[in-house]
Image (tube, rainbow, N blue to C red):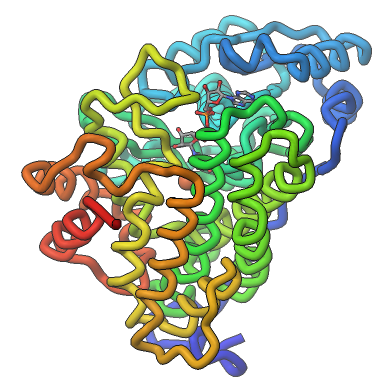
Length: 436
Ligand SMILES: NC(=O)c1ccc[n+]([C@@H]2O[C@H](COP(=O)([O-])OP(=O)(O)OC[C@H]3O[C@@H](n4cnc5c(N)ncnc54)[C@H](O)[C@@H]3O)[C@@H](O)[C@H]2O)c1
Ligand SMILES: [Fe+2]
């Protein structure tokens, strides 16, 4: 592709090829009732079903378990998944997997549930010291030794795209920052994506998870080119966060068009089936895009924002825990970041803004950062989102700690189109404190 697109022109040290990783998905209203048939087709006989307390009480959860039972599959339910999981909650979920001797996994929930299920599947299949598979430099980043058990992921929020990725994110409590495990082996064998489940989603969850999906797509589009990421020593070492490439560009652009058109409607009206369905599809597409390209600064910075939370509580989320929900902790950084990164690839920022619905005709390259920032801010205002990091409890005196939490997130930081020093990160956090 280097020959036909400037952004992907080959460089002396950079990679010459990119991977196209497809994801197997079934998408459609009511498709959760197929869970049993798919589990059988994958050879599952005894299944661990992961979910969280709230989701376990919703009618569509019964649809899944009834379908498993009707297909003659023996299963046991684990409903203790923590919303925004931690190393402690991952370990507890793993014990359930080890004790149950399962040959398959089904997750029914948002990113918290799907990620927990991936971790339980991994550590019960390939036991290891907890930090062994965790991303460096926090963990040892050991490669997963081989395939894990089949996993059918049923997302119930329209955001993370975790059904399409080999990523499991958690809060490492001792470090007060999020980090993750990433391996193509962790990718669910099937995503069962049923937009009907979004009817019961509270507005703030639609907004936060929708902005997460938007960020996956926009960060994929504006990531460093795969041809500028250092060439790996061998093809097996090419990372899933391989940088922007023509495949992820196409999928990310489509996801952004839907987010631009439907996010605000989906947040405002739970009965707007068209908008909620389109957001579900956009989230899955965005998951495929960032699973093939990788995120960058807004996500890297978010891991410190959520890890260092003080006492902020988001409406619509569990009330017993202080938390800046993932999508919120990402998008609050986004306008500040794009003002900084736009000069590295202004045409990509303008394209992203245009997909989101901004007017870009006649815009000069130097306007790109402001145009994309303005469009995101408009969408934050239209969904009654918090006005920057100030609104979730941070002030300038926290900037140093935020930088120290974000800087080690090399997996995502190195994927940015423009390198950010610690001083740059401090400026970016300051720029994210208040937008209007
Ligand atoms: N693995 C990945 O690729 C990836 C990508 C992005 C984010 N994440 C991670 O995913 C987590 C966030 O996941 P999320 O945004 O999907 O939210 P979530 O799973 O944390 O759920 C948020 C809240 O919504 C509730 N809920 C879920 N579905 C519902 C429904 N249909 N109706 C009513 N309530 C419902 C849950 O019970 C919970 O209280 C974070 O830990 C984040 O770091 C992972
Ligand atoms: Fe995310």
